[in-house]
Length: 414
Image (cartoon, rainbow, N blue to C red; front, side):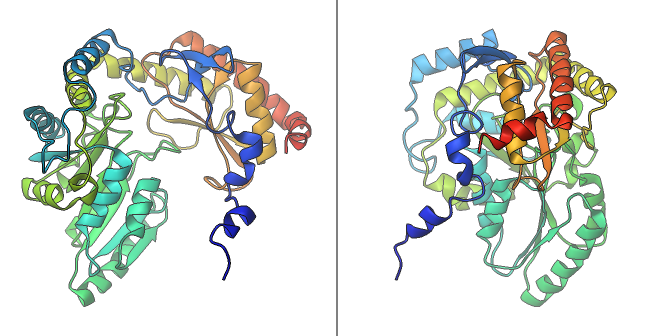
């Protein structure tokens, strides 16, 4: 019998094998200073395109005031204990009520973290007799929730309705044999490439097939639809979403998330989601802060308007400069380039150190080999100057990438 940890020494994983070269710079980087369009990285001020603060609320004076007052009044410990035992308050109930009303659902349930909550919700919603059908590009929290499922699951090609229906037919046959049901899972906005999920077409197929739909709208909440109510409103199918999920970690620049749907479904989740039944309640400072943020989204449409002004200027400017942004339909702005991992490392080092631009880099195994994505997240805090500086920088690095400069430099970095 071998030692359990022998494998760890032999196989660091597809990302871990680059830890020596990447840690502290390309992965686990340290951005310093107030959350803003420009922050400090490696001792230098850089334009920051890697912060999910869509509406610029992270350091808004009104938000800081409420956050500070709530922390001062309650500390970070209250309420202690899980919601079921001793961590339930009228403010948690108020936030759930307002979230449900905002997304036009009967009820809502708070969870401490989006990732943890999604994994647990999928686990609670299905039994071994049920079948899950999900988009292959869904977020890791969905993938991990599906992995817990003891029954059948089918994955369909990304945003491919023909593939979706094919797998839905397969799921229907299995469910008829087992006596179970079907859970379909999609994202409202796919966070890597910025595409909206094809919710309208999926909901339309409810006329032919019997299934329930769970939508992760982490990137759509606050950015899409009337008043920022999300992708379901954007596509006019909110009533066809059976379980709606959104996180506070994007547009609301906070911590926490919620599920919303019919009251009986939400009550079922309250009593069966193990991640919440056995976890400490969301601290009061987070709850009161979320109430303030939600109120600002409702009453300050200019925040979303500014976000889209910046988004449109950034995306049109990049496209006019000849960059490939794929098929993004949202604020998420992926710039597709061709190159290997060493080239990507050299390019990003140059981008950060010499051009003063900080954005996320996405490479294999997240995307196919030979591709590089520079992923930009515009916010309401960005400016036209930030956009102009970024497009000029990207034009510079593209020339170096195409001429082979980064291939030569990258070879010395591995």
